[in-house]
Image 1: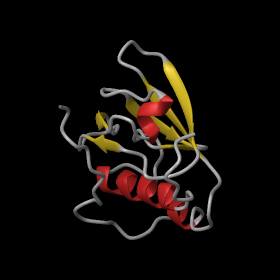
Image 2: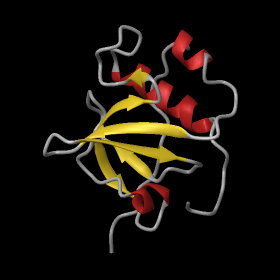
Image 3: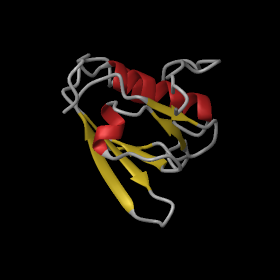
Image 4: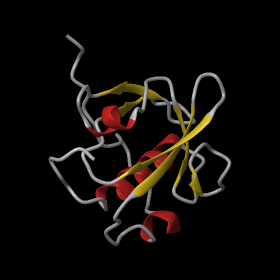
Length: 122
């Protein structure tokens, strides 16, 4: 049996950045661009939450685990994929406003919190 993967808030949250403030309204979807271990760039459209993703505390954020049967699992997101971009914002450290792990975690949390909550997996 695979261990349960839980999303958890960042330990310490930096003050909200302008990027986070732009995400406050409810979003219908979030586009997440990942780099796979073989260097391919893959974009997945997430339509709701919870995501069922757990990330390592690294830059860029790297997927530690995916909840079996959850939304991310259904989308084909896999462990060891690196999160590069969320919608139009780079989250891999190249953007000046998102240089720290804490800032990126906050941005991802705010972006995904704007998604509708749904038990259905698209």
